[in-house]
Length: 236
DNA sequence: CCTCGGATCAGCT
DNA sequence: GCTGATCCGAGGA
Image 1: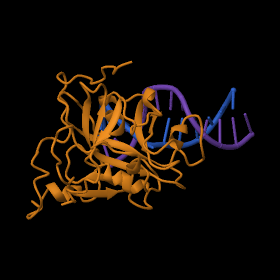
Image 2 (image 1 turned 90 degrees about the vertical axis):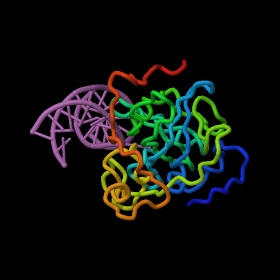
Image 3 (image 1 turned 60 degrees about the horizontal axis):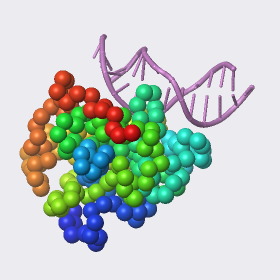
């Protein structure tokens, strides 16, 4: 389901307007969107399958206490990339409105060889997103860009069922479900949101709208040795 | 300056 | 399922 013809625009690239909307909604609609990083001739691409919204008046939001040197990107234009470091990894967010953003938590690898895009830190490491990319405007398009589909590719029409739940690693996040994921997608990080299991597991008449679960593979296989680190220092 | 704790992840029980 | 590595940012003294 999902309107396949909402194609008001001609370009598949996400524009400023897409991001300049309520954060939770942007987070939800980013599911299914293609995220590309690197040179146009050889980009690393994933399909976003899990996100989290960080809204205003939320203590867990990095921008909660106003602008600082670290979070200044969060006050940039809608579509600005906010990359921060935690422990030893980096996480990427897309700014919606000033002081609010969407954390990219996981992606389904579309580029051969891409590994471990499950989890915000792994997603960045796999794609090659670094602190250098902080402040990038993905609407203008550069090393990092977002699109509904690949160039010349046909519209897939629909992203499948979406499940929501509390955010990961946030205390008292029980207020409302701001974590979104594609139901049944094997690349969604754990713990899985409520409703996830119901889609793939035991559900007599679950086959509703196409087997999102056709891929009965191990959730997180690690091609140790083959795919390699995927850490290949991307450009510059 | 010092303290606290984290939008994580890997590894072990 | 739980713990610890690891280290920087933010805030208070």
